[in-house]
Image (cartoon, rainbow, N blue to C red; front, side, top):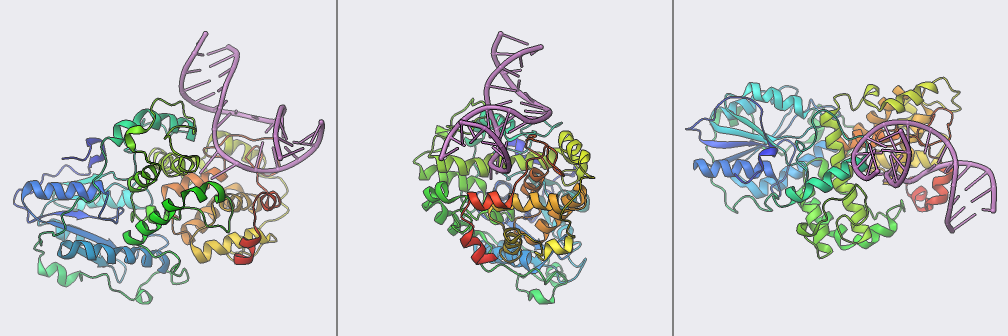
Length: 476
DNA sequence: ATCGGCTCGCGCAA
DNA sequence: TGCGCGAAGCCGAT
């Protein structure tokens, strides 16, 4: 077993089945075939038992915000996985509510054991817990979320700041960087598992489906600029790494598109942050062994690569994994009660302040405000499934300013992001939306109406700071 | 163009 | 107990 023990979690206490016909890997978050500790674990279990591997990848219609946008992205990825896994792959697309129920348990009745993904966000923890009760065999969840195993941090308290979390990473990462997931855990040719024909008869084994026939939200259309899947993800990574120097210069130019654009692929598991970090380090001629340890939490000079590369690595490692730390240690991370005490106190003190502009959820969703820059950001969100990094902060701050109460603002910001953003519903949504309301931040005076000491942003200053002309021309 | 002040909690040194 | 320091800001003073 090459997967670190810290990354393994026994979901139930059932034993393995010695005469099982295959090891079943239920791919529900890391929807890729490379750099995937869970898939790697499943294959090694299959090898050691001398049985084939069966990979189940399913998508249902009952998850929150199910729409053409997210379904199309996942189905793109299923095509890639089908091409790579061949007969070992069992893709399933639910056509009506509840239809998929029982498939996993049925496949598990012939399995030696079941391996799955330990993704802490959205509805998956509940789904996996229920699966642990439903299957009649051992179910192991594997953490392939990031460089730091989610379990390698204090259990009782989330890190309140990036600074404190970065210091933790600087102590712990060298250990974990010596134990990376395998680039290609599987052989080119996989043995064919034998699946009970009655299961295939009841749950058709295909990912070919007309989205229009599914009971999902068709008003959130697919984003053609972002095709899903492992192959598209890797192509985007290669393009980004080749132009990494541009990231340093144009990161804050909304129209330049210098950002990585990888977050949707990370969210759906079509690429691993391990692969991204290795590619960025390799570009600078470095490798994991050269990373500094024992830092004090500072961003500078940690990885020993160019400034642009360091800045990006801080995004994809420190900030991304801070989100995982947050959601696994803060049960109410999407609710008002889960915000820092100082933030709630200051917003509370200003909840009755006059609000010059108040918009409803529907008005904001349609981008009908007095602020052209804000409307443009909302339009990019609706059409492209993302908002430029800097403008996303402004977008959120204005929702807080223009809503009837901070609680309502929090709900609206999450709902708009969850519904329209390709990378919504992610642990990083909880941290980035939370940041609007003071999470992972500090008070920043002077005291202002509505905001109190929550950091404030203005469209006028943003327009001065960034070149927003091209952006308004495109999305305004 | 650049700088300090605004304001709080945390970890660490003493 | 004191001190340094922190995702991106804003504003007024120089």
